[in-house]
Image (cartoon, rainbow, N blue to C red; front, side, top):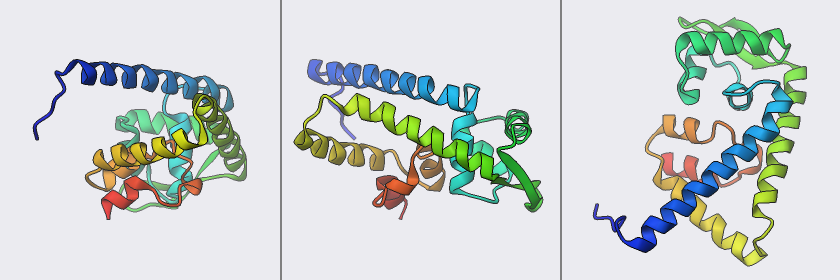
Length: 173
């Protein structure tokens, strides 16, 4: 695929996107860390376990890009907090993971904080601009999707209950 990435307007566009991506990531970290009491993959683990109950640690670690020992330590922290329970055999790879009622409460607070932080980033845009941006973001996300593992990685911190026409899931189909 030929790309015009060297053109000055495209270099600037990529630079602006990078700055906004860092701002968004920082905003999410700022609001989710107090909810879960830790940085890193804890918030994404809660979202992923809620979206895919019964998964094993091995199945959880891939979309979170964690090593096996890192995933085990993370699940232990979440279980010690009372948010995740190991509910039974998950096959060859260990126990199935589910959120506890307390974990569901934390998840709801986490998603509300995420929603508020992202809404603040979008505040300067008009309704028309938000509609345009929605279409552009859907196109960009779909283009980053090749298979189911991309879906799980890209949507690991998504509020999937509100995304009726997920462009990532649509691209996997």
